[in-house]
Length: 48
Image 1: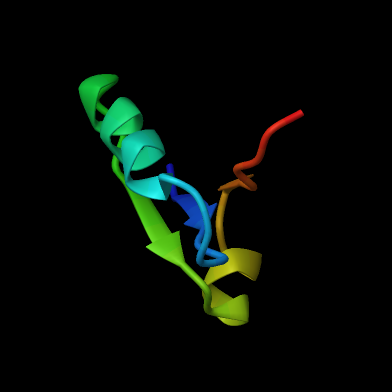
Image 2: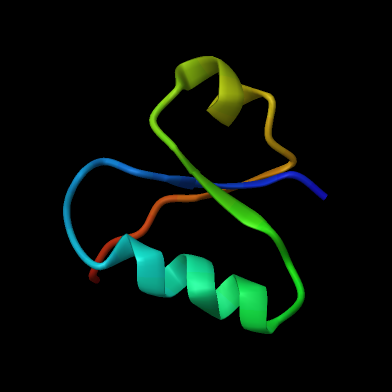
């Protein structure tokens, strides 16, 4: 599974990546539109 975390330059995005790693899932940080569009799953981090 290709998981991308959108890196838009704010917040502690690395902590989300580490959380996925602890679950055994490799998640990649990216700002590249083509990479994001090719992903199976996309995470847009933020605060509600």
